[in-house]
Length: 587
Ligand SMILES: Cc1ncc(C[n+]2csc(CCOP(=O)(O)OP(=O)(O)O)c2C)c(N)n1
Picture 1 (cartoon, protein in one colour):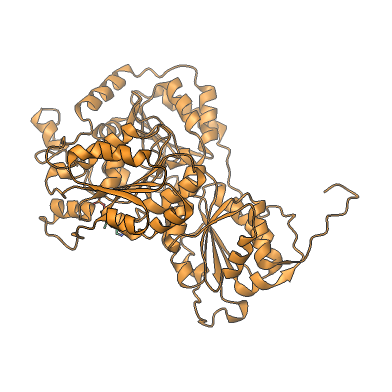
Picture 2: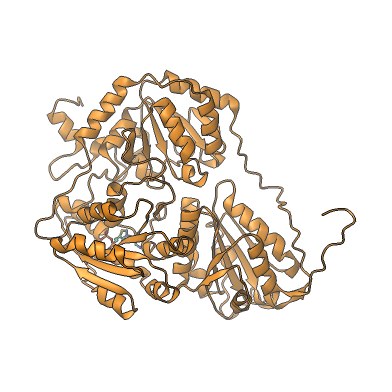
């Protein structure tokens, strides 16, 4: 503030209005919130806001996933709001999803009045205690004068360093009290100073290792998305000529169809990506966490490689794998610093030829449709028809993995997938959140029937709030991915994985949403076109039979805690057996 100037006099405000104003000051433009006794004061305050759009989900879990979808698509903090007790506990899965995938999320909960705290009052849940292991940080506001400072801190903590969820619990009396607020807040958390700057010494070591390597590979993940480093990654690949594979979280950071792209690695990743990384002598790991779905059996993962690992979170480095060149810091800055020092392409022609040969030998493939619709084929055709910048959302299961395998990703932030937590019911609400952020873009939710059922109530939100998400339900009447594991590992004994055949087009119709149901392959492309050309929300129910044969499974597959050599290629072959047969493996 300028010397000599008196601050503009603030009027007395209610706690609830201070909350709204503080959120407006932080640039919040939408909140996904479901009211109740302990939060309705805040909703009353929100009715007066000209800057914040309130979207009423039909379940708090939907609200938390919608806030997550908004955050993934925009990079901004997604905000959800719920009442105390059951409202608050319904947010837990969305909070955990944000924790696992490092998504900036602010969850605000109403709480019973401070005088009742700890008395098992009606709808009292210790939400700070319940979410303690799930959040990056949390607050219980007990003094109305702390509201502006805490909201500012929470927003900064959610989006900086390694992003994540922050919870603010606000008792009802604090929302109702009055004070003269002070919005002149400054971030002041002495214990929180994420270091962004990579060590120059380590960067030089990394560049040296990159030029020494004969078989380098880049393993890129969600950290590239969080730090907006896709441009720097592309420059790094162009300068070095090193091939890149991504995690599920990293899809979009590099164009899938580029010759240097090895698409996704891991359990259902490309065979060639898994072979290549396991033959590499240098793995350049950027914003990844060596998740078990990527590494399989840790002791066997990339046995002959050196590792460079760049991560903002020091606790990730050396967590699962011993790292040779650790670089703690912002991956965008690390890439910029490496790019400045890279002056020529790596001399790795034989390696690139070998990787290319693997790419040609083991492409992703699927059966062409004959009598029934084939889900992978549907995804490919939809990909061809969709806008280039379409945002794609998924639930969890076979449909999710097929979309990650067959969709051609070109840019980051166009992919909404509950990756680390793997939560069914994610697709529809996450798509809803992204569509609110980008009303004019195509947002397509590709979801299995089981997943869709878990948050189907959000169809009403789409209808009432005019959110034009397109939903393609890959409906096999089964919990397909679990049935696949039953086929593989439990002699196809069905342990409650048949869920029955619902007609989602009729359900959508009841919500007032335009819909269609198809099962004949010849109807598929025209139906997709009709869906995409419709202005409002849409449900396309695509019925196909669950197929218990290999070609009905998500292939390839590395069984959990196994190595790339155990990859199941098809009904007859593992990669090990295939190579042994061709004399390429001595064991
Ligand atoms: C909330 C939740 N419950 C259970 C699971 C375990 N699970 C993983 S995939 C799956 C089946 C998903 O079925 P569906 O959504 O119909 O997709 P499909 O595999 O058939 O494509 C289940 C039950 C989960 N991931 N999330």
